[in-house]
Image (cartoon, rainbow, N blue to C red; front, top):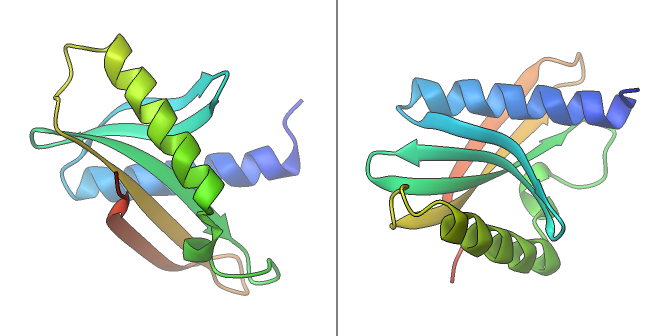
Length: 122
């Protein structure tokens, strides 16, 4: 059974994937689950492997989507990216971790989409 939270997350990931594809990214994986956590999207942008964290916020949620990337989440994304890269030597060696932050308007439509390249350094 799909929860409302999961449906919202899926919608955000779908919007982010479409947004990135329009900008030349090739989506190669979605919802990569490992014991350490989950990578929302994995894309290739030119010769760079990109791990994408997607944050979607509704008007009644606390805080903006870009503020939701905590230090703990950043560390977890780095660990996940390292593990994924080790398992896929055929993919580009250059990599980065991006954030796609989606803010919904009060009527539920997409209000703002921000793509922050290299949102996680290290």
